[in-house]
Amino acid sequence: MLRWSMFVSVTMSACLVGCGGGKPKNLPELGNVTGVIELDGKPVAGAIVMFEPKGSGALSSGGTDAAGVYSLMYRPDISGAPVGEHTVRISKRDGDAGPEVMPSHANDKSDLTATVQAGENKIDFKLNSKKK
Image 1: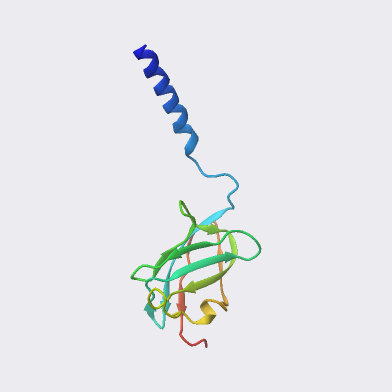
Image 2: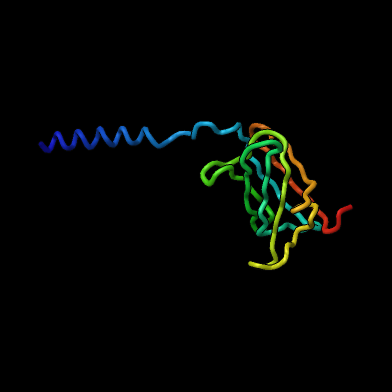
């Protein structure tokens, strides 16, 4: 009986191991995106970077570290952004409920765009407080 229980346990475990892994189906083609956000020549820490596909599709987002470096995530467990053209929005608040720090041309009235290609993408944004 003990051998049978062990056989069933091992068999079930092997079946379950094969069930969870792998890439989810129906994902768009993604490219990995990293970069640096600067405002007036200084890195922007604590900003949220969002890539919104032009057309349809889910957005990708990521936060910046102390050096202004970001990396986009399509889902919490999947890195990247859909291949194609995107509108880019960058937001940073002064404190938890403070005013928006980023200029409107990078945020709510963004004119920033980026093209994501398959593979690795390094897309930096060097912004000025006042649009030129």
